[in-house]
Image (cartoon, rainbow, N blue to C red):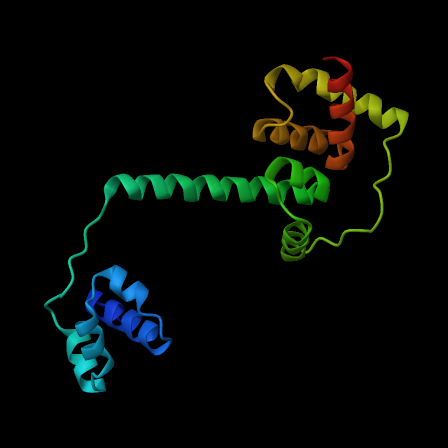
Length: 185
């Protein structure tokens, strides 16, 4: 049987942890007074249990619907971004590339690779052969009108599609397409 945590239990537990760590500022921000914090600090275990399990709540919880939807949208955008980063890494994205698109540091990229089980070889990636370049060029010509900017998230997704379709390393595709775009500006 799963025990649900009451609002009282969550607030008292949080307050006690903060008090024991000598960090009362978060408790004051929650709305507790210093006098209440002193009283909470002196509660016996039985008193803590009585307050925690009471059917009467000492706090009012109010949902800020606008903030909830904003936070949900941010969380979903972050999930989408993590999925794109993971896809790019699985296709061979370099640290330089992920830094340019997402501002990720070397350690962030390394940690993400480790979590995905990707072992990256040291050194530069091999350049594309003429045959591979031609193949990527043909795929690029098919899709390039669908992209406004190579530096956008949509641009990265298109590069991933090209790398998948061309069965090529994403960093190699990125460098080729970047070079072609810079020549045709």
